[in-house]
Length: 193
Image 1 (cartoon, rainbow, N blue to C red):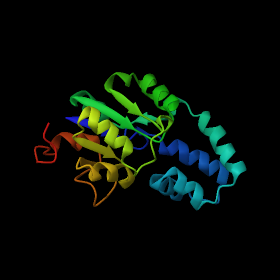
Image 2: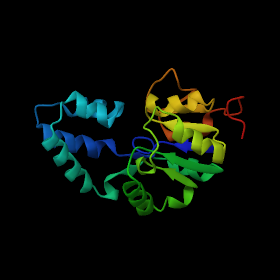
Image 3: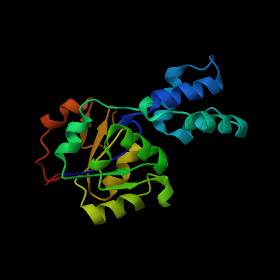
Image 4: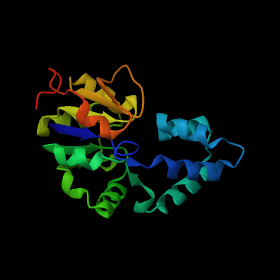
């Protein structure tokens, strides 16, 4: 099975760090759970929702650069799936330097045959261009993401979709925890490898 992964909130639990940063910039009057939920929609959605000023965005970017790879923990059991897959690829809006720093910290670079980041110039999700690129090279069987935004391009290409820790009508499969992965019957027409 060849799997296309989202990064933030799918492979690594990066949202708590981002929530802490946004909370720091916005102040204690804004509920942290609400910030987390807005970030789960998308980073740009959260910035727009809170009407972040250019000065605040500069502060956020400064604080994000101070996050260390150890601040982004991998989700439990995800490494078992990475080992199981024939091929793993990543498509993320995160910058390559940050992705590689985290992967190398955990020794996970070896699991990925290709990583597409915002630095590669593809349009942002839900545009399917990066997925088309990865699918044409690696024949993707399954796309895993934590947001519907991650699944829409795969769905457009007829690739099976799996949402992690969320709900979506676009998803063919739902996982609350990666320990459930091996209990799912992927032998359907959607996932053949």
